[in-house]
Image 1 (cartoon, rainbow, N blue to C red):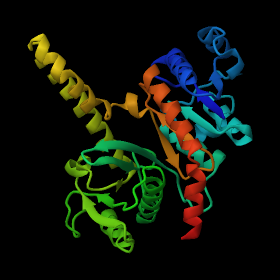
Image 2: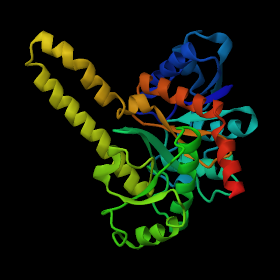
Image 3: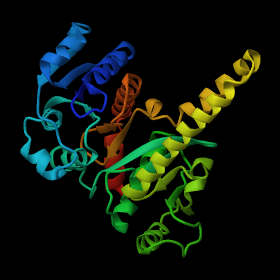
Length: 323
């Protein structure tokens, strides 16, 4: 298995990304190609895993402040563009912490969409009181149509059924109320279209997402990104509050509750989630958090490898064609 890692565009620099990739290599057998400043990256690797690592030089960085389409087309020597070009040749998957917009553009224009996919979407899997829930889109498609949301629902359903083993998968539409008549024109139109699918079970409010009554929650990238980051911020807030209170506890009580606190917060931490796939592309393109440290990158690469091993792309392609 051959994996590409884009080391430019990270908030924490190339070192954290590479160290995370090396941690992944300690757990899984795969071939890694590191794309970025070759001299710097070689110094960071320092001859570790020599027989499993290749380097590709790139010094241009995709700028978040420019048009994603312009950047991905004009900066052919950027690390992200080179990763996309290599992915089309002879690689199995690609992970980047770079611009979400540029990744979506590259995934659409270079990697290409599956035949029956209008636009790829970005998804995450979150822990709930009843297991796991898929949220999509969480940032790739800010402006969407009801047709796109309908397709996101289909891909989320396929992923939940095949990867999470949700035989009785329940799909919900993120909305401001559970009633059928609630929401803006986009939500109302989408509700009507999704109502024809037996797995669609209605609207879901943001406060109820983590209850786990829905296996897939469909929304636009704007609302989904706000939901995801709100959940991340809430976890950080409670972690801070818990730690401040725990400092006043005696050691015996502390040892009793510490494992529980860790288990409650770890699943919502992007370090454990690691990365999120763009569903609907011909080859796996994964986005990691811009602030990812080495632990998050390790998790992200292992998540990407699992996606490849379970042949999710082909499963989505086949099921959409069979509809």
